[in-house]
Length: 338
Ligand code: HGY
Ligand code: MN
Ligand code: MN
Image (tube, rainbow, N blue to C red; front, side):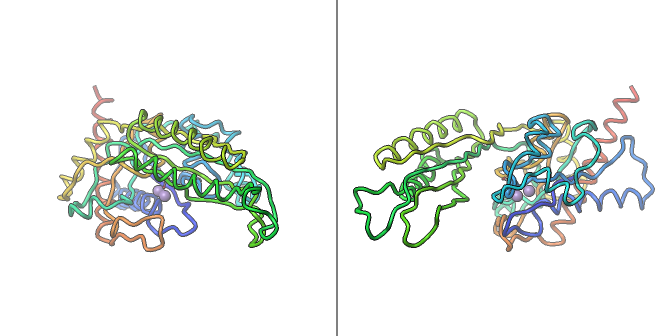
């Protein structure tokens, strides 16, 4: 069981944290009850799930699942140039065990939904069947720094005008693939970022998501075409590089059944749901049977300090997490007894 404790610059108190503390509470409950499971039970806190400082997201679960090379992951740099490995070293989190050496017989992750569906349908629990596909790109637009007063409009190479038009294109590309596609430019850096300098350089990120790979491919083609289409006439040099590609994930039927049964046993209303947000479980699913449990969050708001789920909602999630793990553990014991 587990999730992550890292967050966003203006993150809330539940994204990731609920899954780690809920797992800890479930483990403590087993210990207090003196209940011995068939398989060992562990709590996992996956480092750098958000990718907010060191991109891409879900780095440690990605290394654990073999999706990322460990050396590549620890070499990722933040905006100040510090590497992920050096930052881990600095806080003593660069442990001795090789990430991925430790097999799991199954993995269950409790998380807030981060969207509006469960609350709108007054459902206590989301039985998560999978996670949509997601891709990140780093884009750079290069023009020429120039004086804002002395440079005529027709002589400018204004990187921010090109980037601004591409930001709108990213939005339009998502809207061109309704109803499920989403596209976002979430971070943008202007250089030299001075009131009286025509910006000569802009760097920004693109986040595309959709449940189907073919649609993500179409969105990607449109993005690369837009970069050339927008920046050529503005005499700008522009590049967009894919830095992360997490295909859609379907969770394990046995784990999903354990969650469905757990919700029913615990007397909670539930519905199946596909995750719009990315999670460590999406990578762990590559190397172990995996499923997730969602609880509602107020107004579906997340990645926002206003993020909120009630104690009762959190407790319901922890209860279903514990029960799902016990259901799966019992099935594992029966399989091994045969
Ligand atoms: O990007 C995500 O979906 C996750 O919150 N890291
Ligand atoms: Mn999360
Ligand atoms: Mn998050």
